[in-house]
Length: 325
Image (cartoon, rainbow, N blue to C red):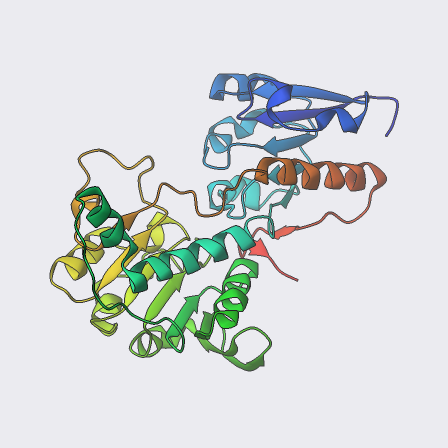
């Protein structure tokens, strides 16, 4: 680095200690903690780099006018929809994300949810609480058809794990192609409804963009098998929640898992809490005990690259909203 200290804003952080391992960056960095909107507005002027530690926060747009020297943002989540406001998209500020860090954990969550449905774990646990011997037959997952909507790195890791468990996977992406190493067949999103009709499980993991907003609504749930289960790990805005509630209450589909919601935390009075055959997961499918350390290590690696003028890892195409290999 140059003799001038590099000013780095740590958004969503009260203390430098909250981000593990920053001492490895050396003494040529000026860390500026910004846990609130007011702090962010105050600490952005003169800062060249921003680490978005709270990926759920959306206050950067309101403070954007203070970003007079900003050149690079490292976001701690895989999804960057909170940052794709016009001013940032049209700027020269580089944007990188945490792609790859949460893939395995999210794939394991998907397999776990599927096993829970197939093996009736919720009923088993409840029967134990009630001291009730509840013998019954359950389903077998092997050979079931799974449609994964979103064929980025997370979708691919889900496909690999489910394939290893004996399930049959297909993908839906922006364009159709065959011979894919992870999915075999990838269908175009324009053929989504046809693909839904063939699937036992549907996993939604596309990035949130104008094209995927409201992608799953009443028409899509009506296209699914009555025995199908739906799992959303993307963003709440990808799903029409009222249409999902209706589909579950009428038995149009057999079950669903939501790990993401249009409003988070989910309000206590939300109908989703009491919707039959719906699992409410508090946006935790990708988080695990050491993920923050891994995110910080990626940031420090990119910080070294930035200082050397090298290409950064996980550079996001701000127009499309995701990393394009």
